[in-house]
Length: 408
Image (cartoon, rainbow, N blue to C red; front, side, top):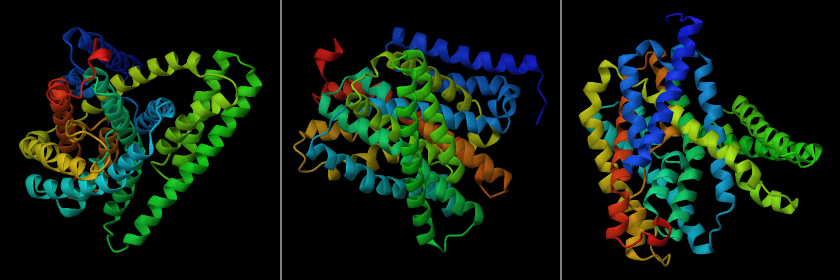
């Protein structure tokens, strides 16, 4: 790894921040989601300035920074979910989409990765696991842009935000298995997955306790209260990840979900801190997308791009519609609402971050075919973002699920 000067490090960081900000400022003027600009901008930046890749600039700290930033994004997503109530029918839909739909998506992604990209089965399974992840970094901006009806929006937000950490944990467990080439102990893998969830729950409980105690100590000081809140999330994330890699994201999400109802019980409100977290989330999404997509350009990219596009189309046109139409039956949803749910499954920053982290580790371990993991994941993320981002509005209008009042 090339040693960079202090000036090079400073320039690399401000360029990433500047590119992200420019994309997010220009996108509303073009009436497109910012993600459609962030992905190609990051790719081009990585192509013309490979010496400024963040994994070189920050070294071993890069994945740590990514995890902590994603944790704050998920915490903010959890706070939003805490104010979004689901009735019994919608809770059932979300549960089915997560616990039945995600395994089906994983299987579909695995088969497509093996037969289209030619990945060995272990790596294809790992990519399939990564591809179940959606998340608020992509779902929320596209829904904000397309304005679907409230019920459809609630279901998609709950599904996407909850799948982010659960999918990341599952992908990390699969990665551990692939790294040691041991597929003989499926029960052990299940145990690790459930154990990671248990650790995340414990860390979240501890984070909530610290947040409540800190809030009482600062006596309504919004500045210190915000610091206590973000500190509690970061500590819970770090401790959880220390004991179970990847589990910190779930801990952050759980703290966010209980933050709103807990604040109401304490006769207080989180409204004063929401602008801060909204700003941090916007910055984080932009910086993460530019930083991670800058890592993609490589000789392997040209080899996998066409086949990875084919995988994307299978997921978009076959897997997701089938999953959604099957699992939203008898939920009181109109056909147009079910169809729109089947036309909304973009992949986001957690999928990219997971592919970047595990891909680099597998390449270092000289696992055959590992070089194709990140480029393939990037192409699939990019295709889903472009397809869903550009078609969300016309599809919502065609299916008559667009809320024209909120869109005005």
